[in-house]
Image (tube, rainbow, N blue to C red; front, side, top):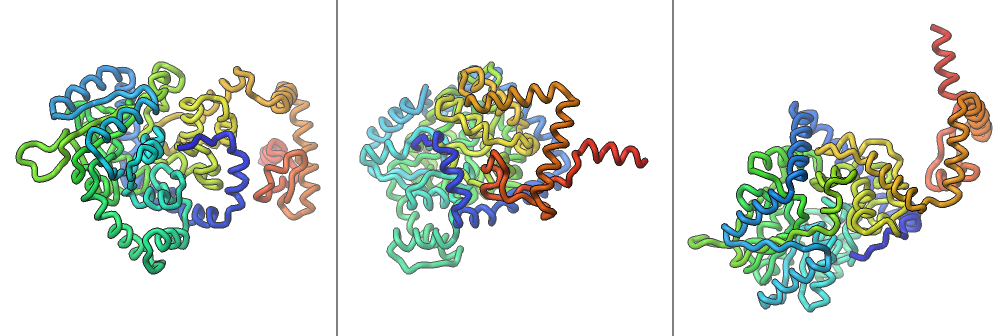
Length: 469
């Protein structure tokens, strides 16, 4: 996937004025949030499970070499092969080699954000392979020639009418607008692809060191068909996705779907352990796991190690007001939202990613809903600190911060300036209760009105209330 994070501001402004995108985002904002809250409330032990999941991941990350070796040994014992890729280029080379050896022509793929991180589709297509995304959302954006805009709902930015147009153009069939009919049409088109593909590529939500199993969770069953019907199954995953045992897996399965979609569980939870064995009626003849580092090992033992706990549920972006306003494409790379604003600078480098962590309002919603309790606001602040130490902060912003610090360190001056500012903004509102534009910083009101203050500061109101009691 092309790296375009330097264009964040331009793409964000465009997203705010994209009528179709805003319609699509408005249709989905409440669903994820409300369903997640209901699912968590209906499970009394949900918060305790979050603590347990955090502790399991911390233990694994502190002993990652041990668990990777144990996982590799278990995969090998089951007849599979584990390949370690230092970076995206290395991963592409390994996978292209496996496909060439298999004499593949057609490759089916389940949803895999790591394969997006690798830039795998582009490499396979450039080498002459037909690549077919089988997840419905991924299939839709493949037809649109677009990257995913969400890690669990890749086509969340598309409206039903846009999907209908894509299908009509690609399938050469009458245009349909009924959702069920659109899904049925996609299934009909994809079914033949499963049976004729020589290689099937899936992601790996979890890798179980105890058994050497890769585990995927889906709602469509496309992952099952992708990995069982092709002669060669390739799993793509990050090195941090390994967990110790099946008992540990049960913890994560209970919080993943609830955090992601508000379901008790996904429709399909599929275990793959090596290639087809003698007597098996289906399954691949070869089983490969490609484990990607791509900067992850550098996070170990650093301030950012907590980020490696991420289980890619998407809860942070579902609850993020910034993501909810501009969608995922504005972030310019594979991982959008709060988690992407940390991961992208760490993986792709600080150059060209300055705007991502600075777009965050630090409201803390992402931290409050993360199923493995990643302190995302703290990590975003740390990225900002590193940018500052690298002298990447714009000069005007530095001057503004120095001025604010000067005033904030002098309480009397701070409260005086606050009172003056509040009264000026209140007078500018002319009793309307909102400001259509903000002096010196029109960006704040470029896409929305700013609620106007009443004319008194919070401290004044609080002191007046206290005086009345």
